[in-house]
Image (tube, rainbow, N blue to C red; front, side, top):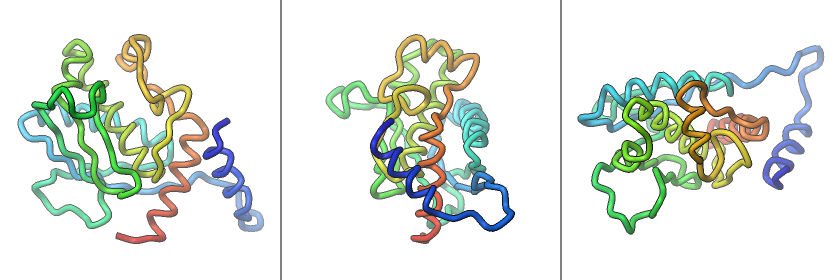
Length: 186
């Protein structure tokens, strides 16, 4: 088990539950403002998949276009379609979890990684992976699932029929991160 996960579990264990109250996972709404541009249909399909993935972690993901009103505490996602080869080589996206706001997805690389029918599934996983970094507030990865540092062909195949899961440690850190974000405010 990773040190970060162990520390998070210890922190959560230190928080006493209300007397007689069963522990329920935190249900929280998170807004993501998306600059989708001409790939709007592809993005809508990916957003639906990503939303259902986050629901498993107790997160209600609200999607908004970046050209409309975007709350101050929202996560902002931008896309690059002509990513230079030397810019984060091999990466499909990057986020700034310590800053807590900005994600950039290299849409050209996402569309080149898998066959066209699998692109919405891969894009959803990339979105979920990067939003998870933002919610957790740390740059960490898991040994398996959606938070692996690099996916392989087996992962890409699984994504097409069933989303990669969060680990228990991922969900715990998401929950703790959401609480921390709420306490900081926008």
